[in-house]
Amino acid sequence: MKAKAADFLIYDEASGTYRENPEQAVRDDVEKHYWLHVGRTILRDWRLYVMLVPMLLVFLFWRYFPMYELLGCFKVSDEVLPVSQQLFSGFSYFKRLLLGGDNLSLEFWRALRNTFILSFYGLCFGFPMPIILALFFNEIKSNIARSVYQVLTYLPKFMSTVVMTSLVMMLVKQGSLTTGMGIVSQALASLGWVSREAANAGLLNNPAFFRPIYIISGIWEGAGYDSIVFFAAIIAISPTSYEAAQIDGAGKMAQMRYVVLPSILSTIVIMLITRIGSLLNIGYEKVLLLYNTNTYVTADVVSTFAQRYGLAGAAKGIASAAEMMNNVIGMLLVIGANTIARKASDVSLY
Image (cartoon, rainbow, N blue to C red; front, side):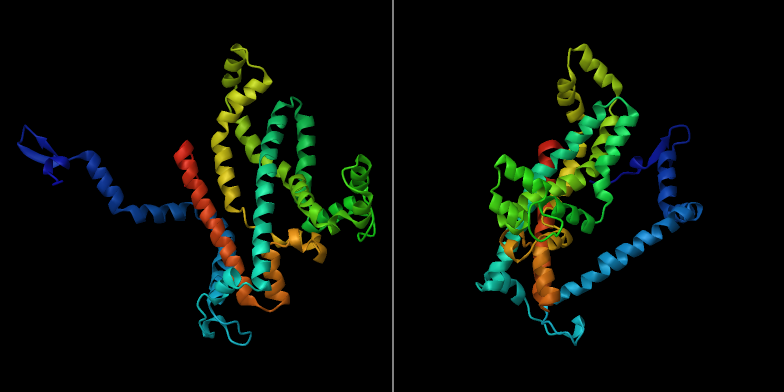
């Protein structure tokens, strides 16, 4: 569409001439001196920008510089030569992992399946728990009691992975941490949910029990800490919404269903998208400390597969290709979940 002078200028009937629109003059001045304003803002708030430097350095050294090593996925592994001087091998590592048909390929597919199953179970059973905890915290009227309960649920998150896994091993085994029954094993055996033989052998030595132990311990560790975001969203709800619901005769459960949950729906969707993005990114530390050769069939994940072949097996190309495929799948899951959420509820991450 062709622009006209009247779109930018104002006609003065008294003088019969055009003059510049004051609003347009302000916009032109702001656009002309944009970087000058930016520079002045940085100089005025330079202390805040200095505080950003450590975070930027962390991202630079731990997120962006390591991307250079991703070239190892496409080059022949050579411990002597740097990545830039190694020969290009194309997609040979990916083909071997996906279509090799040998033991290495079978182990990778098993690790990928276990990664997805553990993450999916963690999402199904672990994601609702912080929301339920936040709802319960909101119903506690005593601030002192609520603070005590919150601290007790947050505490496992601040323990190291080694401490958490040691506690889990002591609960399902004896003090020797090798064989025998722990408190949880004795309780399950007394209830008849597991056999005495399986309990005596150690639940972590049985592939059938690794996934439940991993999921339950993950909920125990992170549910309280993850409830902070949902609890913050709940306390931001206007009290008038509760009063209106009470006038309409809504009880506590009805208020949760028709007031609280719709009000925090956007927060739930955003957190769900971010959780789906890390669906396949299972940290190898916890699995590495809990699994053993007896439970590889259900416990081995992509991260431990890459650690075993990349460090112990000195096959860095294979390990890099496995992790890269895992991360690419995670990125596609984020894009897909965000697209579905945007079309279904008009709430999305971006």
